[in-house]
Length: 215
Image (cartoon, rainbow, N blue to C red; front, side, top):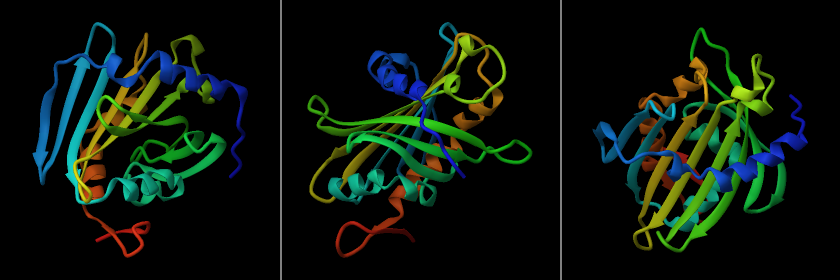
């Protein structure tokens, strides 16, 4: 497989700044899962055609080890159930890069190839390590009017509670001026964020604090 980095994906970084995840999500949330110390909330704002989920849990993993895990993009398929393949395709710095992912949509739908722009930063206000990711279908080989491109926003917030525990907040938001494609709506299933955070809770950090395996 060959992935080509194009100039159009550069504009994704500006979307992170201009359209932050939290500004797209109104305050009304509906809890749909509260199990095994993982909470998942859904929201649908009809006026802005925005759909979102938020998942929250606490893991017994130090923040430094979690940072190593999140920086290792090629390992994403091992703990993110919707991702079959992931690879960094362009890196501006350790905190700004693009990665390609192949996302499983479930039979009979086809897998989707996506390009994500990532900006990693420390938020002093919430004392959290933040991974903001944005993907836009106007950079993908989709049919239809490019002016109605869908945008997907992911925000991971890793807040250290102490030396061994970290609170994780996982946000996913999609927005479009017109109809949101069915394949993108399929990514809004509450099961996926639940399984993702459940996988993180089941990770075992070994001796050097850098290697991780699922029990």
